[in-house]
Every structure is written in structure tokens, then in C-alpha cells.
Image 1 (tube, each protein chain N blue to C red):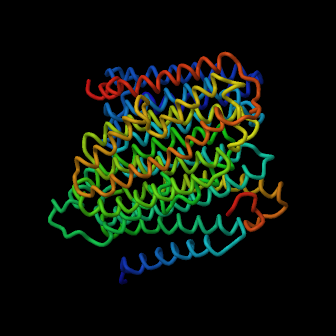
Image 2: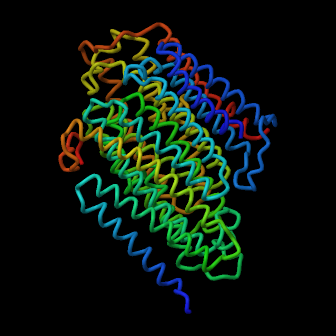
Image 3: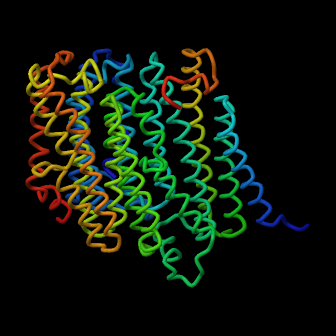
Length: 462
Length: 104
């Protein structure tokens, strides 16, 4: 509850700070301090210290798991502010409003990690989506940005319509929005037969969530939107937002779909198969690094879907580790990409000579995304596949995922190859020493999580 | 006076839902597409109120949900109109077929 209320208040504070001062670095500092307060209060709630005692009538419950994910999301956002804060200022003149919208999105993130009722799932996802439509179109004079935001809006509200239709059918069948009220009818514990409204409702809800996490065959908006949006905001929506919606997805399954595992596993395995295949194969043919990262985010979503497939303790731990590893690495890569003049692979030629620190840290992040041992990405992928194997039904899917991970090494290493083994002069905008220090710290965290994943996972249990 | 059965209302709401979906996929004018999205959301509202009245008259959940949908639809429409106006300034048109910077 701390996180939801404080982040909403901070959003309003940021809007007023935009009215009171035009000094952009002051606004950025307010945002960073506010985020540190938010992170601290969220961790304090994990230790039982609550600022607000609000009776939510069981519609929300604040468990260790959701709070830990909130902490990861807020910490990633803090790193994102420190790395790319200056680039947010370059997007347009309404700097304070961009920060305010990001805080509102964080409020939505805190809601979707703790909902117990489909009403709050809907509200949380809308609180995340509506500010994102605006941020996507933030670069007002850029045609690409305008179109991306239009496209994102059409696809987003279309999937919202599908989600709402699903929720109303579920309501018609069960008379409740609570996950606890739906579960007995889904599992057949109540004596009613599984009726057609309930099944079609659950299916529509699944489709709309697949839209939101950009799982194939509902992924087609992702590359265009990620490509057209200003790079700083692509970085935010490809990482923190996507991971948050995955946690919501897992929570929904945990509550409502759980016992019907067998029936859902075939649908999910087809989704995983398509997502991994389309994401990885299309990423190979991209010429622009930004577009390649968009497809790579689809491919990574395929791996995160294994959490829903496996659905056991491994999966729950895995999604925490995966979201941390994926968010940190992708934020790092995007922060470096924003500094480049040219977004194609050729633009990275010779970066190893001109900017050794950037090239070295970029290599670590790319290795982590590819899942090479000693980086966080390795254990993240390991946990996901272990969850699927422990579940024990469709072993071929795990083999397919490993093959896809091997394909992904190709396009990640293409960037490394152009940085170190090709001659050229990669042009960057000015790099401050502080930027380099934060990058080194971030790379350190990625390696630390890769060697000792228990540092993060043990937080779940006390 | 006999009451209208639930199936009739569900028929209307389903028809509205698919009208909205058809409009969203066939129309190329952005304002019409926005109207189609509103149709989809309103069909859901009808569904909620009908289910609540006929099947669960002792509860208020469905009616409250439809109030939330109306609120959020208003917020969405505000953002959508802003996006459309911005696009009109750059393209001098509100036809989606003219917006071809990205591969559609």
C-alpha cells in the first residue's frame, strides 16, 4: 500500500515541480530523491512497517512476493533515471510531466503486483497503459513517434476491450471478480459444470494478457511501437512494464487458472513455441539495433512464459530473477544505444577503441541477455527451463528453447563483433564520467547476480 | 407486463461488440476507429449491468465495474483525441493509410 499511494503522490509532486521551476536538473534531482524514498518505503513495508492502514475488502493483498518485485522495479527505475535521466530532458520541453507519467506507471505496477480482484487487474493495467500511450508520442515533431503512439493506442485499447469482454463473461458465470471466488468454479470444486461463458471468458482474458506481454501471435504491434517511440521510453516500457505485466499474468494464473493446469498447458506451449520462433528468427534479419532489441524482447517474453508453463516454486523464483536480469541488462544496452549517433549495427563499428568502458559494459549486458554463464541471464534462463523440466510433460519444448537461445547468441554477438573486430569510428554524444561509473556498477550487479542468484531469491523467504 | 429476457440483452451487447470490432478493422478514419472502440467498451457495460440485474440482483459489483469502465474510457478518449490532433498537424489528414512512416 505504501508504494501505490506514495508513487501517486510523487507523480503529482513532479507535475507541480514543473510549474514551479524550469530548471531541468533540479526536476531530475527531485525525481531521483522521490524514487529513493519510494524504494525505501516499499522495502519498509516488507518488514511490516505500513504508513497507511486501508481496508481493501480483500481486493488487494500485499505479500512478500509482490513487494519484492516492486523493489526490483523501483531499483531498476532508479538506475534508469541515473543513466538516462539527461536523455529524458532531450525528448521535449515538458520534462517534469515525463517524470510524473513514469511515477504514475510505477503506481500501476504496484497495483498489478498485488491485485486479488479482476477489477484491480483492469485498473492497474490501464494505469500502466494510458501514460505509456502519451510517452510513446512524447517526441511531438517526429512522425514515427506520432504513428507509434497511434498504433499503440489502437492495439492497446483493442486488447482492453477483449479483456473487459472476458471479465464480464467470467462475472456472468461466477458472480464474482475475486480470484478466490472464481477458482472453485474453474477447478470444478463447486458442483456446477464448467460452463461456456466461463471458458470463453478465461480464454479472452488469456488472449488480452498475451497481447499486453507481446507474446506471438499477438506480438505484431511490438516492433513498430518500440522502434517509433523515443529510445529512452522504449527502454522503460520494454523492461519494467513488461516484467510487471508478467507478474500480473502469473498472479492471475496462480489464483484463477491454477488447478486446470493440464488444459492450459497445451495452449501455453503453442504460444511459447510461436513466440520463441518468431522473436528469434526475425531478430536475426534486423539491420537496426533498436529494432533487433524489440524482437529480442519478444524472444525473452517467450522464455518468461515458461513460468506459466511450469508453474511451481522454481517458476516463481525464476520470474523474479528473470525480470531483474532482463531489466538491468536491457536498461544498460538502451542507455548506451541512446548515446550512439547511428542505430544500425555499423554504427557500433570500432566502439571498442574509442569508448572502451562503454564497449566492455555493453558486452557484459549482451552476454547476460544471451544467457552465458557468470552473468545473471544464465541463472534466469536456467530457472525457467528447470521449472518446465520439473513439471515434466513436454520435454521437446525445453530442447526447442535451448536451440532458440543458441540462435539468439548470433544476433547479440553481432553487436560485440562490430564493436571489437570491425574498424570504423563509432560516433557518440558526450559521455560524462558519472555515466561510466553507473554503467560499471550496473555491470557489477549483473555479474554478482550471475554468481550468487541466492542474494536476490533469499529475500523472498523472510 | 412481461420483462425482457436476459438473452435479448446479451444479443444486443454481442452485436454491438462485433459491430465495434468490424468498424475497428475496416474503417480508416481515426475518429471512426475511436468510436468503434467506444462501442466495444459500451457493449461490455451493457453486459455487466444485465448480468448484475438478472443473475445476481443481491450484488452491486457489476454496476460499479461499469462506472470504472466509463471513467477509464473517458481518459482513453482524451489521450486518443490528443494523439489524433497531433497526427493531423504533421500529416494534414486523419486517415490511417496516410500514416506510413512505420510499416503498418
